[in-house]
Structure formats: structure tokens, C-alpha cells
Amino acid sequence: MNSPQYRQRAIQLREELSDEYFILWIWDEALGAAGKPGQFYEIRALSSLANLQTFHAIPKLFKPISIYDNQGGRIGFMIKKVGTGTNALSRLRAGDTLELIGPCGTGFPVFRGRRILLISGGIGYPPLWYLQKELINHNQIYWMHGGGGQADVFPCDEIWTEDGSIGRKGRVCDNLEETITKHEVDTVYSCGPQGLLRTVCEITNKLDIEHYCSLEAYMACGIGVCHGCAVPIGHPEDWTFKRVCKEGPVFNAKEIRWELF
Image (cartoon, rainbow, N blue to C red; front, side, top):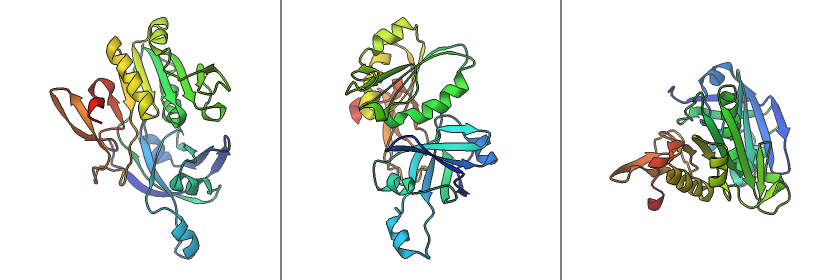
């Protein structure tokens, strides 16, 4: 895996998805060649010392954002406005400068000839969009995605919303075991809130299905230095702490020690 690199790149396009979600697009062929599905970048709006009011309004820390799309160097970051950092990014427009460190972390393994289920919730959607583009020509894929309401869901095979505003009412993992059996799934990839991931892991472990899970964590550095994102990983008799930003964010679900979180 290549070491993460620092770059400053102009935003080529800002794409609006809803009041809460948007995509920032940049262009960099070298970064495009290096990035893999499941990896992420630490990104931040470039601050300006010439404008102290703006400078103090911009968060000092980078935000970890998964790669949503990568088309030969046209790289997209799908972002949801949820806090100070992402709200600062939401103020950026085409022509503004983005600071980036990456690509970071370990991505998803890519297979051929599998019957694959993708399952995501909310902002867990972006890394699976990039992944399915890499898988779709060589595997059978079924994708389930869920969210609180219509604003949180995006194109897939089966939509779930907690308020029932679109798709099926309930949580995306409500009939997961039935879906796995129906589609004869042998490999699962997941990304989303911790509660969703934990439930999916419990079901796939019970069924002994191969499952790769992308974890979320608070990250200060994003490059494995501070160890602030360490989580318990390994077999029950031989586990250790591994960094979500470095050894992850993708882990074999059978090795995640949820009982120690």
C-alpha cells in the first residue's frame, strides 16, 4: 500500500444531492491510480491566513471521508452535513481549494465469481458505490440500503426507511437472514452506523458467511500515528487493538470483538 500523500487540489465540481448531502469532485490522475474501494482521504477546506475571520471558523482537524467514486483520476467525496467539519466543507464551491491526505487505510478485498450482498446505512453508502463498480462485471450483486427517511437513501436494489417514507418500512437488517438465504449469498460487504454493523456481523457469523465490514471511528490524525481510533480485533483467544485508519477501516467481520467495544 502506498503511503498517504498531502495534496492541495481545486474543486472541479460541487454536486447537490439534497439539503444534507453533496459531492465534491477533484481531478488527480496519480491519486486516482492509488485509491482503492474502501479507502478514504483526510480532507479539509484550505484556510487563509489573509482572512482571520475565515481562518478561525475553519476546523483545524481534517475529516476522514471515504472515496465515493474514482474514474481515472476524477475523484468524488460524498458528504453529509453533520457537524462543524462537514458544515465547513459544505461551504466550498467549484474553484475553492481542498487539502487532502491519502489515500488512507486498507480497502475492501475484490473477488470474482461470488454471490455478493452489499448492505449499508446512511452515509455508509459512498464506499459501497465505488466498490460495486469494481465488482459488478464479475459477480452477482444485491444491494440493500437504509436510512431514517427519504433524504438518507440512494439508488440500490432494496431500500429501507425507518419512517416508511420510501421503500420498505423498518431497518435495513430486519430481514437480512432471509435475504442471504434467498439470494444464496456467500460474501457480504457492509458499511454504516455501528449498531447496524454489529447486527450484520452477528447474523453473518451465525450463518458462517464471509463478511468484510468497514468501521467508523473518531480520527485525529488519520495516518496511524495517534492510535486514537484503535479497536479490538482478532480471534477471541488472541486479539489486539488495531487502528481503524491504518489496518482498517475494512476488517474481516469474524475478527471484530464487539463485546469489548
